Image (cartoon, rainbow over all chains, first blue to last red; front, side, top):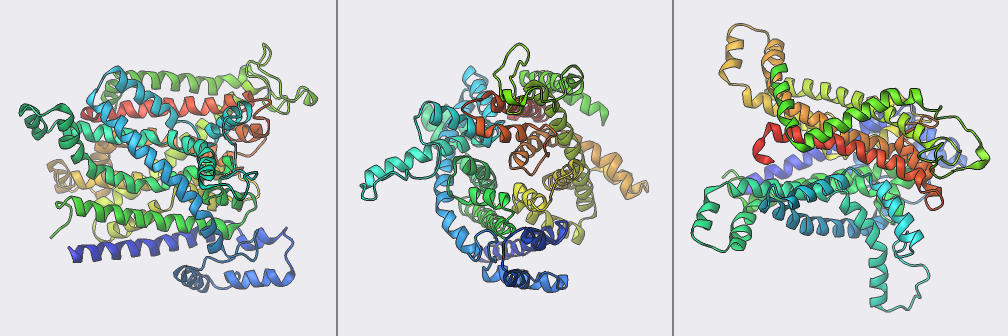
Length: 324
Length: 280
């Protein structure tokens, strides 16, 4: 078991190195010299351009650039932002991380409670009107671009009907001495629309996965046996059948991260939510390549880590997966 | 290969979602192909001062901020969106099949290297790869957009094809082909590939939906189809400042995205269900 874990860890580390290599290749593939292009029309002092060139090793041989890129990544140094010069990319990412974790966490919670419940219900009533219509509705929401649904919600719920705030994470008019309850309500009101948008456009995935997993378990003999023993249906459904779908659902948890992060680039920028997604969107608008690259690196690292954790969790709950 | 695909299509037609998907998609393709001939020039600006006007008899979807006919722009956008998606998916299907066949058939270190690379590539969210590639362009040519979308979408396909090849690698009909002295590429294209046609078709269909959403998102960020070429994502971007005063300018192009992606995904689902009836 220990050896298996070690091997899996080593594999994750190797993947991470290849990810950094791929990102370097992507940077080099971009036509021209990114830094020169990006700095070109900006008001930087002449010395600063040289400093940036020095920092990114522009103009030096590719292998030297690669070495300094790898060394920087290994030290956790992702360089300096061009727009927010001289702020470091890592400190920008760190300041934006909490908002994204909050939004992503709430969406994940929604999708893995409501989505699982709906998926189980669909499977139980397979072929019924409920099954078909929830499936269709979820698929329709899944076809919506997050930026569009977000804009529509802002236009109607926030601006026209004035029900919920349209942007930001907190009300700037909130008195600084407001008590905790007021602050919490304010935060939840700001969280509602972005979380709803991200959740609606992605919940179909959890529902379908859960439905398919339940259907495949319902076919098995031990479920029939449990029913034959006269156990209450709810106990068969949740205690026997659903428990065995947890393993495949765990794998899905590992796949969620890229979907959430990609979705939040659009949803966060529409709602001006101060997270990583809107940071990336701003970096695009201001052509801040180091920030965009740093965000991509952070996100990819998190994806590798999530895959690793999902695999380890998998081995923990399902002994058949881990080779002795 | 053709026979099994025809069978697959026939079985998915029996699903109501398959029928809806095929009908809606056919209608969309027809509209995209012939609609622009009957509609005004999408770039024509009849009266810039008038600005965005609500839907009326003359302009069934209203006009946008430059008083351009929205219906014509949505229909012309369908042309762009559908052709970009079709070409990009065709490219990634080819690349994925090629890599998957080689990795699965060759095995050994070729397989190991290719699949480690695919593992790593799958760890970088596709959107970010696209952003990093596109953000440096001054103006993105449509061809470059298609190539970039196509070359970033084949990783999962290559895994799928490799899996199918490994599954069939030691089946008697493959061994027989090899024993008869058929060259590797012949065994691959004549015996292995046809058996992967079904799963590939499903992956391609769902891939079209993904690419339409990605292209719309990129255009919304200004990194996709460049104005004045009409694209649905770009139209939503331009309508963003008018979202309260002229909501139709954002609603119609968005609804076009939803309808198209939904139609494609319904078809993909029906194909999937036809391939594996137990999952439906």
